[in-house]
Image 1 (cartoon, rainbow, N blue to C red):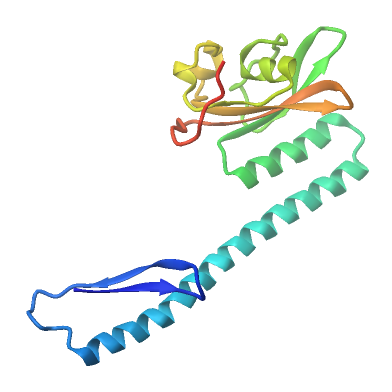
Image 2: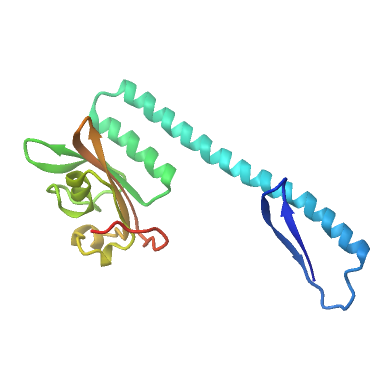
Length: 195
């Protein structure tokens, strides 16, 4: 067995491991060739990784640019929310996104736009569910498993919301709404907010 560290300058990128059932298969000449192979593979792996990062950054900047252009030209809140929700869903690659606004006359949080209809509630009181709590407490709530979260609303969970993140939208010192994203699968690798 021969193992070669994959390095580009100092950071390690991984290991190439060769095995053979034959005894004395890896003669010094072959080991030298394998070490050279590893020195060629490491930069290729790094280049592929950098290319993926650049593509992700390009998607992010494109979405942010489109959102900024829309925000500068759209004064209608629902149209702006639609652009923001669509870009957010594309960037985060989640099952659904929503923007709620607080209607001061009714006292409820109502969706301006949602990417998947009938998953979230049509009206929420501040302090109700992750969306309402994010609004009232002006802090985010990350829920990895909605079915086991003690403050969940039964409606969204029964309609396919398994995990989600809600984040307050604040203007000045006042909460004006909440952005939310969700997935149809639990996110056990992410840490939950207590609640």
